[in-house]
Image (cartoon, rainbow, N blue to C red; front, side, top):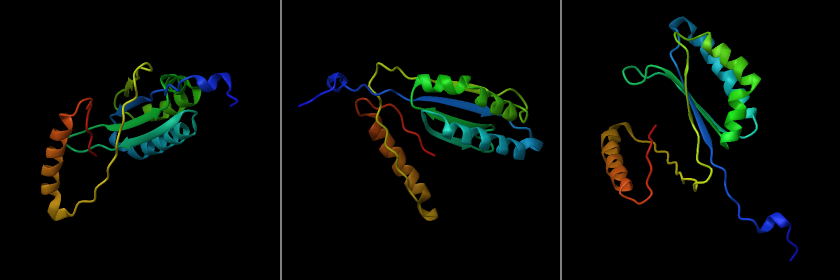
Length: 156
């Protein structure tokens, strides 16, 4: 068997990094903010190492800010994205729409640790079954939390 020198080395996956930006948008700048956020999202999608992005709009009484989430394949890719001139220029467009400076939280990963496993489920719940579904979800989350290695559950 012909093996290259690198073929015998164990593959060590690189862990993704996440940046979460919260934005308190001025009421008269929402349309401009959405355009600026769409531009920065599109640029991120084209950036080397891009994994995913999501923008969440405010929810009255629960989440007053817009939230933009960006995931890149590694800490290094995230650092390159955050320091890129293109991102800086687009972020300046976003900042012009805000009542206060944006808040950025970077969640870097430990590249020495084993990567976590994530599962994503989607459910379509009939309107008359929402309460029963929520009760069931609470039971399943409580059961999951007892499993060794369990980290967290998110619901959207």
